[in-house]
Length: 116
Length: 113
Image 1 (cartoon, chains in turn green, cyan):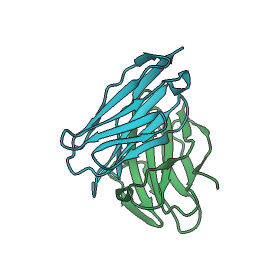
Image 2 (tube, chains in turn blue, yellow; image 1 turned 120 degrees about the vertical axis):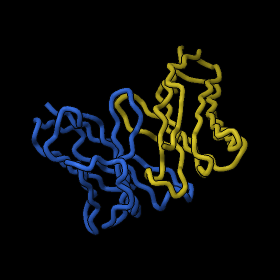
Image 3 (cartoon, chains in turn yellow, blue; image 1 turned 135 degrees about the horizontal axis):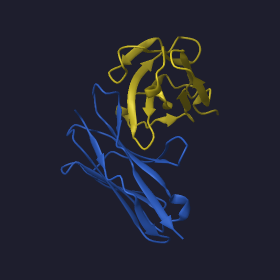
Image 4 (cartoon, each protein chain N blue to C red; image 1 turned 90 degrees about the vertical axis):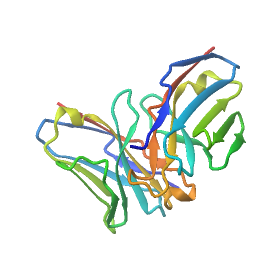
């Protein structure tokens, strides 16, 4: 029973390039969350998606960032025209239902993005 | 702005002692509370969840919740060097707009042999 799979584990991009981060949730989980973690900082919520729908994107910058969770395939977090400040660890998590039901998240191993 | 506050530490305890980690939250309607452990360079892993006032025990871990005081804590008994990690408190904001879990910045625990 595979957990949350994220790839790539490490990603290096030059300023101005695009970064694509992928996340496959636990089998059967339809809720996906993306968080960003800067060094020595906590996890900052970015976006919450269900299949084909963005439920809450209040934590995601309005420009350059987008996320999707198509009917088939992994969730994608896309960062266009990356800047040095985008360097961080990006974690994806999934749950079988809304956490109001008491379900904690299962986290993936993260993608470490470095912008040079 | 709904917030979750933790003492960043580091909290240093000797091996075998009890480590006490604290967390306060600002939203009175919060329903569910979680503790995650994160080793350096790794992803967070869920270790405890609690929903009702009082204590919940699981092995060496005890979570305590006081909704009136908006306070949740984690006790680690018989602390081991392998418990050295950052502990993240997470709070579910029922129906909130910031996703479903808000995380504190974490408390770094160091258990000295």
